Length: 297
Ligand SMILES: [Fe+2]
Image 1 (spheres, helix red, strand yellow):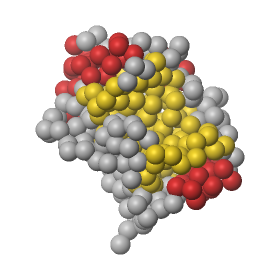
Image 2: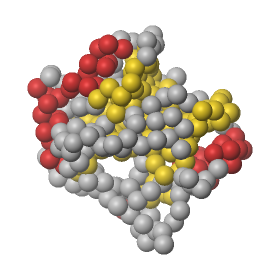
Image 3: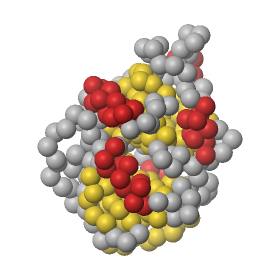
Image 4: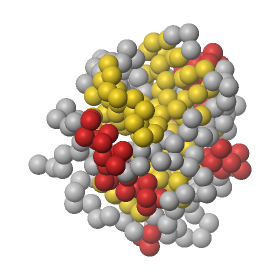
């Protein structure tokens, strides 16, 4: 019997985009998602997996990440989780309410002390998976956000939301809330912005093929393809039309309570390397800049 997490996973993220029609076209035709529902100001997009949606796009003046949404376990209490976040400096912004977003369920939201909106969803309905397509995202894999105090923010997830620290490199903390090596990565930076959002592909050849589709549409690979150290996942990073960094990933390491937590000295690359394969060119300056630029709205 493994550890029971009160949060079962990262369900979805919400982005602000300055051009909803262009964003919808990009995230469907090129990135590989499908429209689940739309209103005048919001488009909800799903992957091929069973989440009713994984990305919501909102019309706004400038690009931003509005929120990250986590799914609460059936036997966990969102009020208790919210209270634990409030006790660690977050502010309640949405008491539990039924939502009419795709999948429905009860939504609770807080803003943490660095102004990141965290939403909890409970009892959202799952949908029938679409036909298995190796080139399209199944679900979200992780959010990586920047932090001016990595250990403070890692402790927020472990102490308030029941996550477990999986690895700590010099620059990053990797925390998990199911058997995936990480669902959240907290990256050392002078700002508390979004670093990137990763989408889970069925296989690592899917990462390659979908990356080819991006290249066909004149979106160069910003970093990769490569295989990460912590988490062992295959990756390719891109900058979307609005400057948001997005990643295709696959093959993330599955871990349990027997995993030995890595320390900074366990994750040192030989000179010139930034991944296991060593074939990726250095990260593009555009990608590097974009990984700091997107605020939490
Ligand atoms: Fe990533």
